[in-house]
Image 1 (cartoon, rainbow, N blue to C red):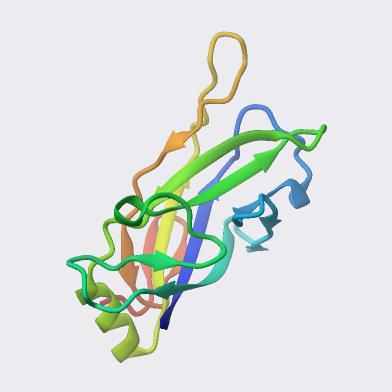
Image 2 (image 1 turned 180 degrees about the vertical axis):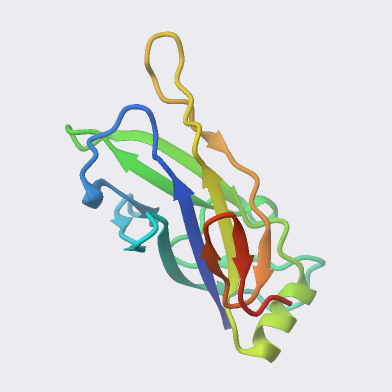
Length: 157
């Protein structure tokens, strides 16, 4: 089984309601634990992950590993925030289905991770104050993206 590096960059403010503890925000593994990212000076948080991939027998990559959730044809990552009591205040689903075999091959050939940037500066809540989670679209690109305010730079496929 082969693996693929993934770099997720979160550029956002977090949900309306959560504990605000930096240790209460991360990528969720299958056991429900949150894995912290590395905060940057600009407020963005970077998560470096390794995902496993089933062989190229299928039309689209099928990802496996401790951070991968969902059925084979609809895999995703969870980005989660906990409240002060330790329960999830919000989880966002970040689909992996837009990653193609071409993306995987290019990343391997260039020896760079696939990079996804989630920009989320407008958290939403219901009228009762509950956070609105759900799925967020994300584009995965091959490269060593270094995100500067208002621009994307770095090696991109």
